[in-house]
Image (cartoon, rainbow, N blue to C red):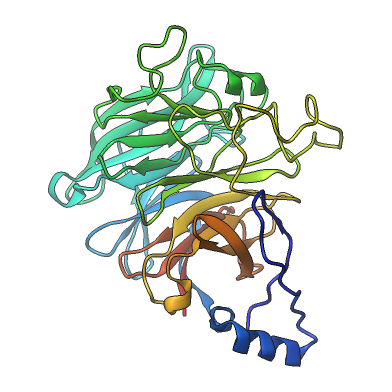
Amino acid sequence: MVPTMKDTFRTSTPRRLWGRLTASCTACILAAAAFSPALAQAIQAQTVASGLDHPWAVAFLPEGSFLVTERPGRMRVVSPQGQVGPAVTGVPEVATGGQGGLLDVVLDSQFAANRTIFFCFSEPGRGGNSTALARARLAADARSLQDVRVIFSARPKVASAMHFGCRIVEARDGNLFLTLGERFSRKEDAQRLDTHHGKIVRIQKDGEVPRDNPFVGRAGALPEIWSYGHRNSQGATLAPDGALWMHEHGPQGGDEINLPRPGRNYGWPVITYGENYGGGAIGEGITQKAGMEQPLHYWVPSIAPSGMAFLTSDRYGAEWKGDLFVGSLKFGYLDRIEVANGKVVREQKLLEGVGRVRDVRQGPDGLLYLLTDEGNGKLVRVVP
């Protein structure tokens, strides 16, 4: 079986044009498979666990279990056999509702020695809520969180249930990146340096600000800010070369992949390839402006991307190694993105109908794992 590929993407960089494959044209499919072995890889979705309540993120514990967050405010351990454990105790109060709740979780790179995890959530407080990043130790029996401490809390808090961002990435230097949404109703804040809305921030593991952050010492700018002009990022990862990649939701069209660089402005809401919900241009209706970065890649129509991982293993064949994988919430598929010389050259839709893909991770076994964001959410292993 050869997965179909649909030429529906847009990109700001030149690309080769690929013919549309259709299921009704067996000869075309066979010819395409012969032309590009990468298209011939057959995969299937294997359910590891079900019955999860809107799961948002998964991390891999050393003994083979999975640490999963559920948006309503619970964290659970799933056994290697797929048994869903009771809620882990010690999770702080979470502002649930809308897009808010308990969101991303990652293990510290030294987890085997210190059992430290980092997680982000919508934190209630005076004036509303905001995205917060906490660190904690997962108890030896994995039933509770200990020494929980919030190390970053976005400012200001606002009364909104939208656009929290909330993906965490540990860089090779040990610092943490955290993506932050602009809270929907405060989109203009993405261009202001005196708020955290619509930013990527970079902090140390104790919450302190790295001295080489781009806005350290600049009057009127928050020193945690790494890059700005973002809308709402629910996917971020390190590329094989250690560079930070992220994607962000556009309003109606204009979902973007960006490579956030220190101090750079990524344009929202001044420039965008999307439009207002219901139609109509946003602001000046422009897609480029001096001093604002162009996306590496964008989607029209929107796919509502969530989760993001580079494949570094050859478990699916050598042709897929180094490719980028992104989940689609809107259309319920896994998007395989071929990258060459830092540019997107082709996309392929995989596992169409698998469900609203919220998270995409590569496991220690070199396989890809997905979470579906549904009332009966699933942890899925992608099997070649």
